[in-house]
Image 1 (tube, rainbow, N blue to C red):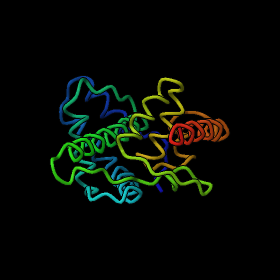
Image 2 (cartoon, rainbow, N blue to C red; image 1 turned 60 degrees about the vertical axis):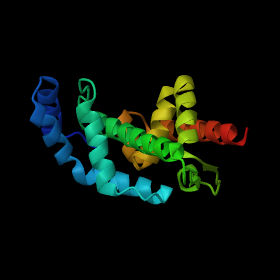
Image 3 (tube, rainbow, N blue to C red; image 1 turned 90 degrees about the vertical axis):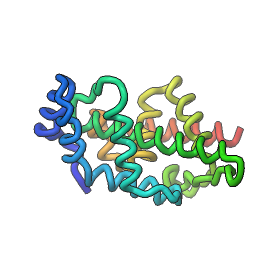
Image 4 (cartoon, rainbow, N blue to C red; image 1 turned 180 degrees about the horizontal axis):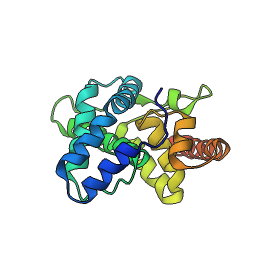
Length: 187
């Protein structure tokens, strides 16, 4: 598994992208491409979605490249923004499928693997997005941990490194986020 340590090359490319070099973002994204594909593959495997791994990574890139001025300052920040972009792509796709006249029913995804300890809870992608938005209002870091873990597919150690927090703090925030999500899903 790739290390979540900083990459000076990616940081330099992101600085060039923020300065207006259009090709630099693509180069930074390319440098992280294999890691992004791994994250997308894990996410799609959990969802059992027909969305293709490469398509999800490319759509996330298009969201990042086509959006407002890129604010990523380093490798970890770009990975976090990419996880958020993947979430947005999947939510947009779920909304589009739900809006179809025929076959617009939403398949549930299981959070059992992400929630751990044998808990299983089925929730629609759109419902998960709403829950994460609610959690974000209450505890931004806890919501970011869920997003990185579930949509990014990163391990606890990788997330702790990315967020610059201890493993213990991460586990505490993860337990709090998981409890919130389970309580809201059962309400």
